[in-house]
Amino acid sequence: MTEPAHDDDIEATAETIRERVAEVQERIAGAQRRAGRAPDSVRLVAATKVQPVTSVQAVIEAGVRDLGENRAQELVAKAADLARFDPVWHFIGRLQRNKINQLKDWVTWWESIDSVDLADALTARVPSARVLVEVNVDDAPQKGGCAPDEVRHLVHRLRSRGAQVAGLMTVAPAGVDPRPTFALVRELGEGLGLEELSMGMSGDFEAAVEEGATIVRVGTGLFGLRPTFPQSRDQGR
Image (cartoon, rainbow, N blue to C red; front, top):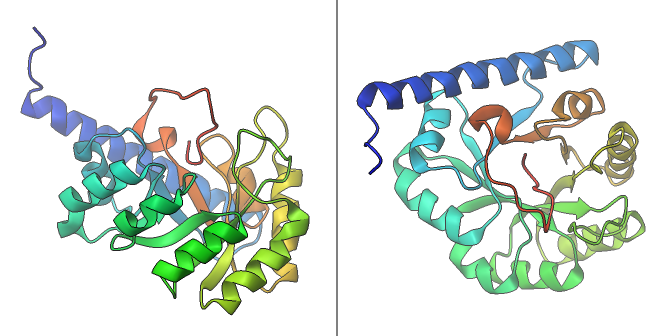
């Protein structure tokens, strides 16, 4: 039988998370300085997929108020448990239309809108939703996102239905230099007058910040290793 965790184990885990938060924040600050950007111009989102509530609470207590979740059921459960901390929830996974009603009372940032059908479904239920359009630059079938040449139409569709289109989101291809992807998405955003760029995860967030990211989604960099799901690439590693 596994022994229950002792109080000092829980405190050590919280301390480790605090140290990781401080390290990630310093790396973000360093990337901002290298790029000549203003301090505090990047929002750190803790990607909480499969993480227990105790770990997520430790991240909040370390100063990270923005939380990103890939799965509707997990977000709703964690949001109820953590409501007293008043976090800001980002939905960063593949959004299913039948999950919108479950999520709408909790989610502030809808980061993965990638089709007209999904845009219409969301705005019908959350008319003034704050949205990031997800862009799939490399056309990878296992990832969500619309093609770059579809972004303008989708942004206009969302705006026409009352959504607050804040910016764009992307996941860079694994195993290659992410900068061309980040640069392309930045250029798309600039061309549409969009201010927010959610791009960069644990392995590439510094490059993303140097290329203009205003939001980075960091999971393992804050929480440590977690189970992987080979059928799709996480949107907040």
